[in-house]
Each structure stands twice: as structure tokens, then as C-alpha cells.
Length: 106
Image (cartoon, rainbow, N blue to C red; front, side, top):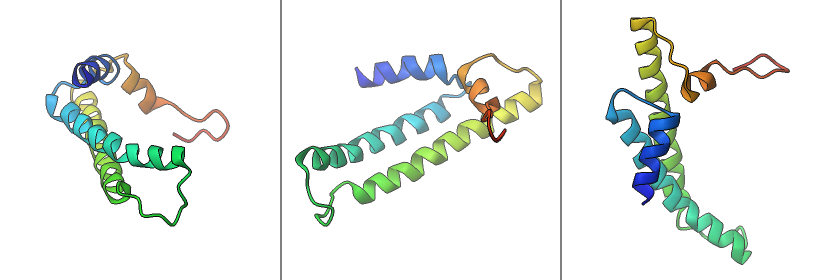
């Protein structure tokens, strides 16, 4: 069910013409969620900070992988927009063009 839900969400909110980018984000998110479960468990139990956390290293790796997957998705979208001149009206495009109202930064 998680895979089906991810497929619907990614197809709706972050459409990509190639399945490669979506699968990269999907696998990165799976790693991220698996690692994040340990942090949540330790927080609920009130474990002290000095206690070793099993998901710490894999969580850092998952973060790096997720950022790389999103960067690849953005590169792909920019290349498609530059080549075709078409600008789709979807969430990804809106997020790419969003600016902070106070600072004007992306």
C-alpha cells in the first residue's frame, strides 16, 4: 500500500517523464523512513542523547540520497523546460519558482 500511495502522490504532485527520477526519490524516502523510525522510538522513550542510535548513520546516508534524487529531478525538469519551452503548471514547477516574500530568495 505504501508503494501504491507513493505512486499516486508522486504522479500527481511531482510528475516526471521518466520513471528513473521517481524511483530514486521513492527508494531514498524508504531508506529515510526506515532510519527515522529509530529516532522517533528513542524520542518517545525519552532515551538520553548519549545512547547510540541504530539509525543515525543510515539516516544520514538516506538524507544524502534523498537530496541527490531531488536534485536529479530538478535537473531533469530544468532540461526539459529549456529544451521544449513548455512550462507545466504543476506543484514541482510552482515550488521551483517560489520565492520567500521577505527576502526574495528561492
